Image (cartoon, rainbow, N blue to C red; front, side, top):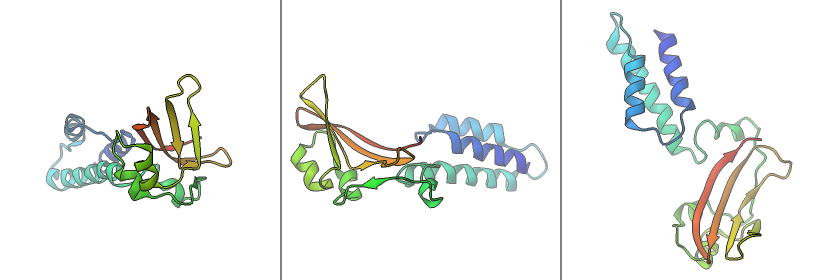
Amino acid sequence: MVAAALACIVVVWLLPAPVTAAAVNALWRMCRPQDARPVRVRGATFIGMLGMVSLSFVLPDGWPWSAFPALGLDDTEWAPAYSAVGFTSVSLGASQDEVLAAVGEPLARYPNERDARRETWCWTRSPHSSHYSVRCIKFSDGRARDKVREYWVD
């Protein structure tokens, strides 16, 4: 029974952050024990699954990628004036001036070679081409059209 609970936790751990209620319900039915101690094992399994799913929403880079810095495997260089709160607060459609005021000066600005109206600003990079946190905002016509917040594993 413990092996079944651990297997369910590993499956939930590998799912992407936007886990649907149907997927959690299917995992719950699959992992539910059929022995005489169902309540205790079901409760532990459910709490473990809920904990793993919630980590995907709470940690800035999701789970398990937030463990990389703790293990010393992170190679992220951050812009000196970067503001995580500012990055989170930027909404799509914000102007470049609003983004600059909220997040700070980016490390790099990448123009789009095919379309001069598009540009990408990045506040992080990997100096040694290794695992790192990515924080970029893509602009179109001077307005934020996409936010990239992920962990790049190289």
